[in-house]
Length: 227
Length: 403
Image 1 (cartoon, rainbow over the protein chains, first blue to last red):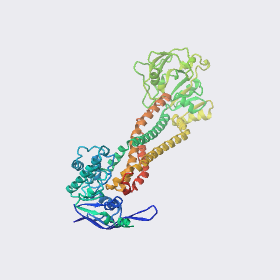
Image 2: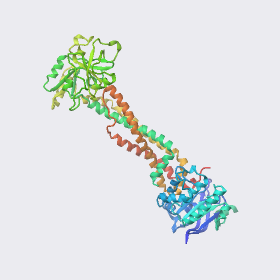
Image 3: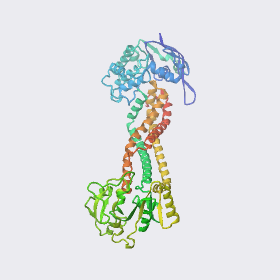
Image 4: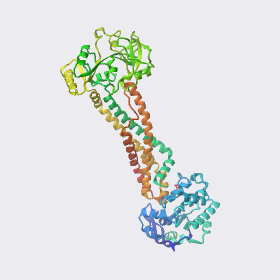
């Protein structure tokens, strides 16, 4: 059963000279429930801009995004926020942990706008990612790898159906990147969440059975390269 | 995690600016409450203090000067009146009690007031309250050089029963103007929290016949405190007419509270300026909250973007900022009570030392309810501008840290 279905997705931005610059133009894309898929693409190919409409952070200019049976692209912003909070977990390249919050508080925050804070679950998730002894630590007191693990726990905090991972290993060293990726995949599997990861790192991409070529998928980028 | 939790963590994260801004609110709030309470309490107390009398009879002059001199033991006497004037009013059928006072000397700045023992035995300085002596003391004998000291003077000058002193001429202390007479402290009053605490009471004749005083005025008095019989309100009006309108030799200050109220009416402009300054201080404090939060907006854009990416609605972010501003104001107002207590205690000490009038910092005043509410509301209002900025934060473009 399909979890995510996208058709004729377009997203443009205004350039400083006032013209439209199309960044994403995807004819179709689909991801089934609990599937794990990576999209390969260079920096600037529009990968992040592709993920944002899926998460409801950006509203597409055109096209249809259906997530877990709900048409995200047709929803108004508060409803998109709600759907994001209850259905999606997001892992960022720069972790995006709140510096004033402890590890536990960051994970609790991930639950707050969705199903509601559950301290036991938050602690369980942090123990799962190996940070059971760091609950009261602040992000600045952790290594990059540890911060990414907090981000993983936070992304899973609302029991999402889909985890979006945007270059999740981009800021990690080789060893941490490998461990972190394995953790993301295992954790998603354990939580029965589908995973859509975008990266330009061939070693990361090599871990996935299903890898899509975002260059080909995104007609906007292909046209740009041609011109 | 609730919005309250988000606000709490934000305050903790920006602890320094929170404390500094809350401190500015505390100062403003403390100042506002202090000014308000001192203003209202002093007005109520000064217009309420009458030493248990309805009127003061004195030489022709200002009613205010007469009341300040005879009731508050401030100011000089406008002049003397003859003993016969005292007897006349004492014998008036509408007068329940008339007590003569004579002033003109001091002991190291504290005023000596000559009077008769009736003041202590018959007058009620407050309803149902007579002057009382501290243990071991006695009332002065009108025929001897004995003194009963007010509680404040006893403590400040460390005067106790058995001590002796030489009065000084005039109402202002001058070492060179010492009288030769020696007075013995025979008793000290229990605190009455009235201007009487700042006075050294001696027999009337003591002032009248002090060495160096004019022998021709040896029977004159400075003022007469007058208590009218109950239900004689019309008598006060008649006496007012008789002394003030028909006569031209004496002044009848009646009712005492009205005379003081007139004073406060005259300085009403000062009251209004002070109030205006308080409101301006309130606005400045609100402005400091606005500036503090607004200045942090740029560095916090990413924080808002992350919150939004986690599913927080724009309205949630907006509310969090408004609540944060209100919380800073509320925090400041909590501390404002400490500043208020310190300020009013200090000011009350000065007022008591100068006038004997006692202000109570712990007495409830509605400003203690409405000013924290007003400051918190104003704080919340000042948070609206930065909250709008937070509300408009673009999520996608602010999720990446600035390079």
